[in-house]
Length: 250
Image 1 (tube, rainbow, N blue to C red):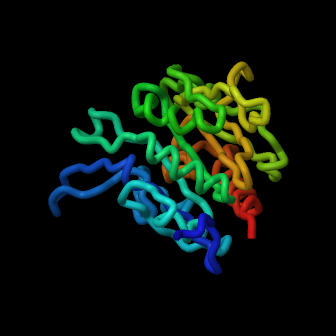
Image 2 (image 1 turned 45 degrees about the vertical axis):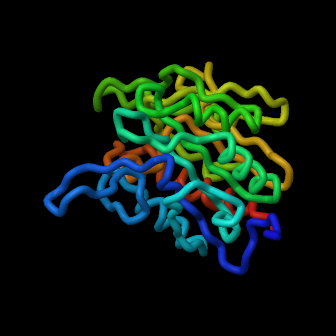
């Protein structure tokens, strides 16, 4: 029988590419894009991946449904922006079996990162089935709406938890869904510009921990691809990565 444990000698951060599996046509044919480790364009996670590498992680990608077996060697598992039908004609929705396998992995000590999006750009019904397992819910709303580059201040975050973001960075996060905390153990770590809504939260689950945020947030465009001077999402990405690493149980 498989021993239920996410630990091994190497530190691996696993990025889901099953629930998020967007493609587009290029001169080379149909290719994957959006939130990939090797994508150096604005749409990619290459900057965050580099931060993980600096902190001693190996990067990996999961192109199939998560199970205890294929998460076995992963310390951190990131699910970002699950597909809607407008993004993928045949999306892989999160099913009850996926919720069971992921939650068992977290309970055994896994570190799960759930990154949603504003409700027009993410499949929330099935994603919330997973979030509900931990007493959380991504809401069908739009926080920190930024209409153009003349209104960056509308995306400035507040209520930032400096036990996670120890550098006290100035964080920008636009067009996000808020998060309801239905578990008394859940904790807000970032709030909306007006301070009225939780847009990032954490909760412990068994031996593991879940970090949730209402936006893909740390993709290249905003770390710090085109942010005005003064915003420090790159520093926030470093702080968060260090904190995630500290949550790993040996």
